[in-house]
Length: 348
Ligand code: NAP
Ligand code: ZN
Image 1 (cartoon, rainbow, N blue to C red):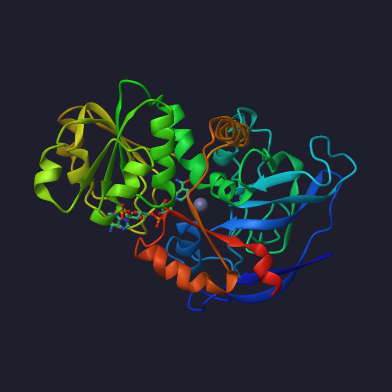
Image 2 (cartoon, rainbow, N blue to C red):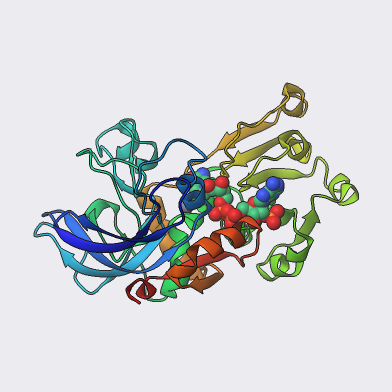
């Protein structure tokens, strides 16, 4: 077995603390990474606090993983020792169902295996990227171009693909008015991709202090959602709203901002269900859709698109011992826009 160091939550009431555990040996189809950076997603916090469902503890969060390949199995074809590579939210799926065959492993009909807080197909719990090393089957490992800053590339593995995938699926681009609701880790990537795809991008935010930063990301307009006059001015105006909000919010209000035939795309996952009045969607034939992360081929496509177009996350690098304080800052919206853990600090 491979010895790994990590930060783990013992249960939903306890802060993360150092923990040592074992990973499986590198099998013939596996790639082992030394983890260099790991992004901090709001999903990490939702899960260590059991906000969605009872979790598997001890829990090592982290699904925005980048690092260096340190070992490959005998049958591994696409990765070599010494290369840069990444792992996102998925580490396995059945590979044979109709969704997996189309590269939609996130919607595997047998259920996918997530990078942490999940059980592998062998029944063994998975542990994520707040750790020194990870072993993953080759099909779930991504290539990271050395054109990208490695730390700033880490959040692409979740925040990046989660916003890229729905914008591609709904073909958002030139001639569309796109609103990005919530300017956090996901939201700021939604702005960058929306702008790159040619849409007219508005940020809908609860935080007036983010306006200059939103414009610096390329957003064309900024609306403070607590100001009724600013909200009234954009009623019925958007083709799409990309909803990245992590907490309960008034869907009926935001649906009123869509134009006829507009689509509200949910990617944020508050712990409570949404309350949507039928009038909010039937007047104007509006749709509410959702999208979960992205499959492996599209994640690679997104990473390559980012390398070609010089897109990465805006990050603040942290020491792993500051993780609990960083969660508190994330909850207050006090991060521009993603914390990334320098995993070297695990050894200190
Ligand atoms: P984040 O960095 O904390 O950003 C969330 C943003 O939502 C905040 O910055 C804030 O933006 C806004 N917000 C927070 N509370 C709000 C409230 N009560 N009302 C309105 N807006 C509020 O989180 P993240 O990492 O981007 O993740 C966002 C959500 O997506 C989380 O629920 C996460 O679990 C989920 N997620 C889903 C997927 C998927 O596959 N669909 C993948 C990854 C993450 P403003 O300050 O601009 O208002
Ligand atoms: Zn995530």
